[in-house]
Image (cartoon, rainbow, N blue to C red; front, side, top):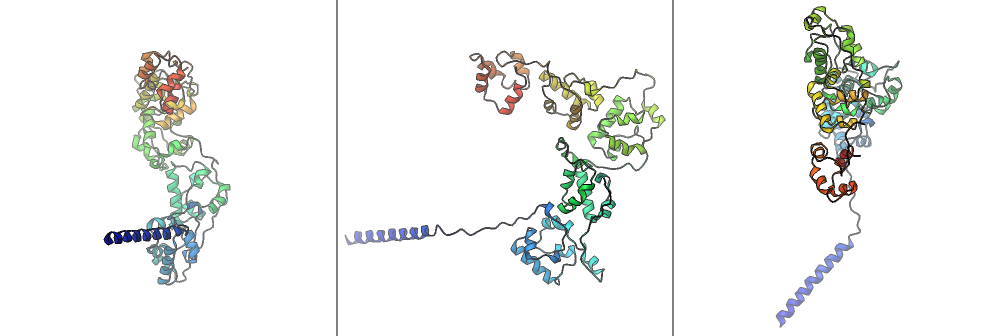
Length: 434
């Protein structure tokens, strides 16, 4: 009995200790949780401006995105190297500044590039902040590396600006896009903006081309050339993309029977913009011998009238007319085939869904040509022919369900509820319903 008694007392004692421990824990629940601070490795590039790292205090280094510990390390390193950073090379060796962070700041640091440059000047002083020299309005697309440097940008900054222009496809496009160049900070953009000869807003269709702009290379013709002897690589060397070069060669060889006869023939090629034509015009030489060689003079054909694409309907445009516009056979065939399966296009957006087409060129065609969908075959879900449902690209995957549901339902609304198709599929199907 005594043994049982002591066991019970021991159990109660342990239980009491557990309850007291729990109460102590709950009493601490109102204590404030330690505040956490997260330091971002990057800062908005638009907020950066040129700076001398020797002038920055602890607070200013932190505003550049460094933590307290990183800032302390940088300032300690500054003392170790003699209390002054002599060059970018020296600053870069500070282990608290990552390569990624340094590359972000590099263009804005007012220091010589190397220690040897700094030591070369006995009366060394840090680089002064550059002021921009702008005297008249200008088109930024026409400026060279030297032009940007003469304006007040460093060599690296000028190179970065030109690299950004190439990324956009060889043109800054608009003031909006020009402002997005990270080298152009807010202060400099405010000075440049009144002098820029650029549209204020970016064209609505610009995003459709940005994915291709990385591969676009802008080059200016440096010597005389005969456009009838150039192959795809030759046109690419003049600044055209591979697709554009293929269109030009296809246009010359198939539509013009092998050669450009006049400057207007070149100018009328849809992928050669008016600006690009004017750039190339002084260097173009049409050689009579190459025109004769490339032309089929033995079988003269009546001159075919050019198509006025502004009066052409996309639901009746022919394969030959698509080739005339500049599409290759694959693109033209795909578009005609897709239109035939649909029974006609209802919207221009559908045309861009066609596989294997040059969307950039087709988009240009759509901006000119019209679309008449009044003759396109349409039905209700209830009365649509079975063959039509099973062959139509938008209905064929739901055709069996539609045919089954309409046996006992004579109302399109009820059939839609039973189909439970995804909204995007339903939207496409409704284009062809009455």
